[in-house]
Image (cartoon, rainbow, N blue to C red; front, top):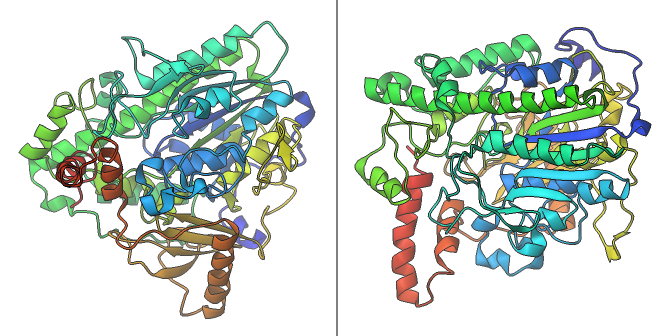
Length: 585
């Protein structure tokens, strides 16, 4: 493995011989973007201006082979507990779990009490614990972050919400469910999500600035989940950037990622069949799509700008040098929407929700925006697939761990890592004891992730040995990682429902299926996947399962009981839901 890694190793020079000092009780800032694609930020090959994230990359370790679940809630459950999402009670987002699965206790889509959060564990080590952002692990009072280890919180409980005002973005929600310290909360009139979340984080830290305790701040942004919205001054910077379309952007990002060492120089990428031919679009469609992506870029730069405000605050208060930053995304880029201009029916449906889609105001207050499947492929490029799917574009995302206690020189790590590794890494960074078989008087699931400290310290080339495996399943999409290899099954409509085998270290774009060439490897990994399903209580999805249809049905089911009315109303809401949320070419 060393030989391969040396072929595309470092940005700058490696820092040899340093060691993470866990005895200093550093502050931890865990930043999670929402639906951020693999190459959206500058240090991963993107054209979007992200100077703060770039600075973190220059002061720490960039992971190029880090994986999450391909959807938000399962990732968040694993991120905060170090336990597989099925055992943690969040095998899928609760909105998409079918009744056949929901009758089982561990398929509720809300964080179970058989796991303990990293926030709870840090509290036992004397840390202040703060959260500001998207929760999506339960909206009942006892399920809120205020009761799961966070002493100060302002949180949004849904899959997403508007970024300019307190209103839902989908018809399945009656309201945008915001709470603060366990109670319902009303957003301020001048709300914009990225600014507000950093404001609250600074407020929480400042409230305890006089004591000597370290803090853990968890900041799960709404950026860049739909609706994609950004202040006009950020959007305007990108109005000419995407006029050449998604194919040109995807190739540019691939070239940049190779030049930076993010992917191997000899690696290739596939062309997703869900991508449209840019040249066949009308000039109006080209102009509109370029603006959609400009808003997306503006939203990312706005997030970066507000992160810089937190960095400046920590520098001004003398806490910066004692703070370790972890920056990542919950999954790959979101592909919903259409590549062609919206029609009258979609305008009508969105209007009923209080949204417009006019070019002139796209991204501003009252607008609804997505980037569509083609720009989503570019956002995830040079990887295959995107959010919801088990391809690398859905699961492989940025991860940066930075701070004076780590290293002052930029370095890449190409070792495989997984979302369950974040909690054990934080525990070791803060010298916090791992939970035993019980916590708070109740039995808890053991942490399955690994600390990444050996990679940060350059004491090891990998934290998972080649005989060990990490399984994954979400909504019938499946994968298993072992050594440098991955088997993956993607269901329709973008996938073929067949198992494939890839060497994702050499071929992160999943372009060369090795199943026929390495049948023994495939067979071994398929057997290991069966063990993973058994050990983690994975349930099969029902025949014909479709996450979008199920979300619509689950949204309407509590509203009506008579069978005929349910069917009639469900049909209407499904049509509305598809037009507003999940249209495909």
